[in-house]
Length: 190
Length: 190
DNA sequence: CCTACCGATCGGTAGG
DNA sequence: CCTACCGATCGGTAGG
Image (cartoon, rainbow over all chains, first blue to last red; front, side, top):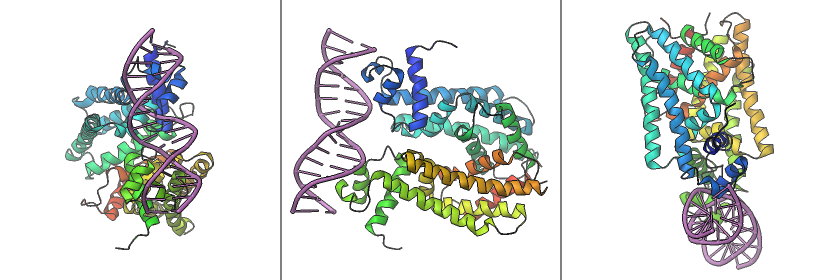
């Protein structure tokens, strides 16, 4: 277990509290209390409450893009590529449930400029995901579905995983992504 | 266009503001301002801020259960039943985007007793949905997937619709549910 | 990292 | 439905 710097400790605690009580519902005093210092002392490590939210969102979004960049331009059958991106997505979410929850649901509390910045980041990710689906449709490997609707639906399902996933449960992230891809590709009907 | 009573007007406005800015991020002064009265005057129509949230959540949950009750005990092929419950779910969400968003994402800001009450309501709905999937699996009409994981994923996708659905767009609720069911049942692979 | 404190805003009440 | 107001809490700063 790596020892966390106070700053890392603050960020980690904030991730958890923003997830549990929401950004607006978490006060800096709550946060300071959970960390074990006075509220005023937080400001030696972070600029502001919003700065804290921004850091968390950017950090997690980086994880998503790093994963995407690894496979984006690789030549691969569409089916395989979709399976892979789903697996990576699931891994990121399950390995950082708090961070993922904040990035996915609390980002909207950012102010104007940062709000738009994150909005664009999220849009770009969706677009890349959609490209993979689209490619499969165009190659004739996938059915002729609506790629946008399809992508939005799959990402929604993936993004809610943090809400019900139990890290101590029986379902490993790998098993989870496998079942997910199988269901998506093969369909429910026998 | 029916003329709304002040009370209905407050609830409708709150639905929209709770969705847009979150429950904790919406102040009673914001709300009063949007309605066009003073904050103190709100309390002639509602008991408290939380009472407002509770009303919204219960109202929407009732819509979901009414729809479910209509088909729950009807004898019907599993495939058809799943298609139908999806269609009804989509209809409710698309016809009340604000209310659905609040019920689905802001309910957790309720205090203890009400929190648990809503938690149980949501759990019951998920369980009923899962039963439909389960029945199909047991009858051998559906593949042998994990009904719980399947239900959670589908409901996640359905519950995020409010986040991207554009009522003025080309996609009608009926068309949306059709594509949804098709994708789920038939799978993506050609 | 703390004490002491700022102005602003919060949900809500009293009384009319 | 409003004016006037309550105590509590908010994010954040000054100064050490």
